[in-house]
Image 1 (tube, rainbow, N blue to C red):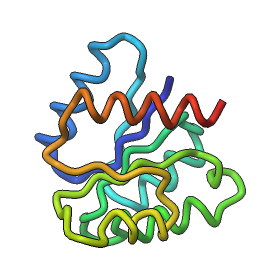
Image 2 (image 1 turned 120 degrees about the horizontal axis):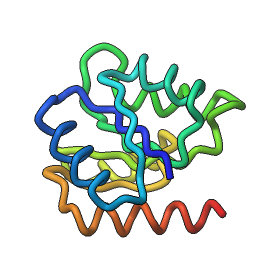
Image 3 (image 1 turned 120 degrees about the vertical axis):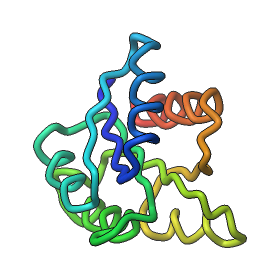
Image 4 (image 1 turned 90 degrees about the vertical axis):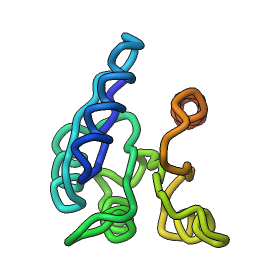
Amino acid sequence: MKILYVEDNDDNIYMLKMRLELLDEFEVLVAENGEKGCAVAAAEQPDVILMDLEMPGIDGWEATRRLKANPRTRDIPIIALSAHALAGSREKALAAGCDEFDTKPVEFDRLVATVRKVLAAKR
């Protein structure tokens, strides 16, 4: 399974990419901002996208809207990741087109379960 992780924090990228790849069931591609995330998603067609919502430039909200508006990427499930677990954040992420929402710091086992659930629903 190919995962695209769109994230601007190098520490988060290193930690999550390494842990996911250690499971030997995921290949993890990385894009450090929303614009690159959209380009990589269109070129690589990942099975699922982990989308940080708070990034400079094109943020995760706008990147998600662009991905869902593009016929080449609209069917790729997107899991929003946000450090802001405020009331309404999940609903806002789902309204923007995300398929799921999880909080940061990432609770690894819960995130992997969410990834597997989203991938199973896609099949």
